[in-house]
Image (cartoon, rainbow, N blue to C red; front, side, top):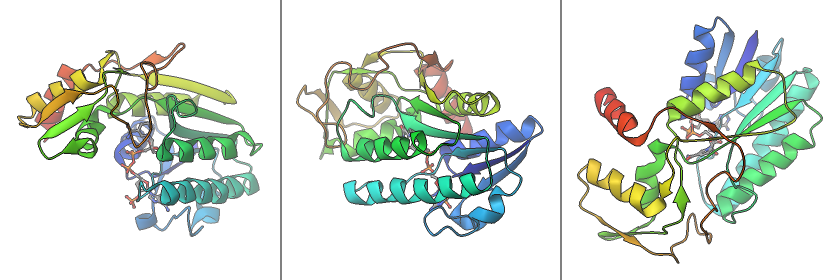
Length: 250
Ligand SMILES: NC(=O)c1ccc[n+]([C@@H]2O[C@H](COP(=O)([O-])OP(=O)(O)OC[C@H]3O[C@@H](n4cnc5c(N)ncnc54)[C@H](OP(=O)(O)O)[C@@H]3O)[C@@H](O)[C@H]2O)c1
């Protein structure tokens, strides 16, 4: 089967491409560097020829509210139009758990991306994931003020990128659901405790302060704002195993 992975050079994209190639599929790892750009439209028509499944794993170069919204709207429109013209049979995209019930600029952009998919007429499956374990450092950095990291004690359930990619590949090879599949890590704990555990593990001296008023991505969060409310597929990799593996790989 021919599968195009948009953002095929990224964190989740490169892992998904490897899994699908191992399964014997013809996979195009699409990115601007490989001449396929969902913002300019460059290379999209050619990439879609004979393609059955498209997996959208692209991310915006800027996380600023307006820029990220423009990225996901323009990218989504161009990509879905090219897919419709080529009669692609399944569009898979990676979104975020609680994106439509937690308000911040990045989540709003993902809601806009999901809306374009749902109204495109192309059979689809949206995979909504919790935050990646690989993103913990980025979260600590964006929540830091000098040596203090303020994090709300809401529930948090991060997932390893390897487990995200395995689920995305699995969904892409199954029939379109025309709906949403949620995925999360195997461990649920207070957000501040997980960030503190990560910083301790890497020997980062910054102090994590539990602050119920601390925002996430600029938005307010409450106890269940970042975790699945219903049934979710759980990744296998807990924090300790993920950390051991990430150290070995480094
Ligand atoms: N971070 C989280 O915790 C989290 C949680 C749930 C869902 N997600 C979602 O997961 C997805 C993948 O994230 P990631 O961390 O794997 O992303 P990433 O590592 O930042 O990779 C982004 C990919 O997008 C490509 N890209 C950028 N602009 C493009 C364009 N105009 N046309 C085509 N490709 C373009 C990049 O190509 P180059 O290499 O050429 O720049 C790269 O391959 C995102 O949609 C994100 O919203 C993230």
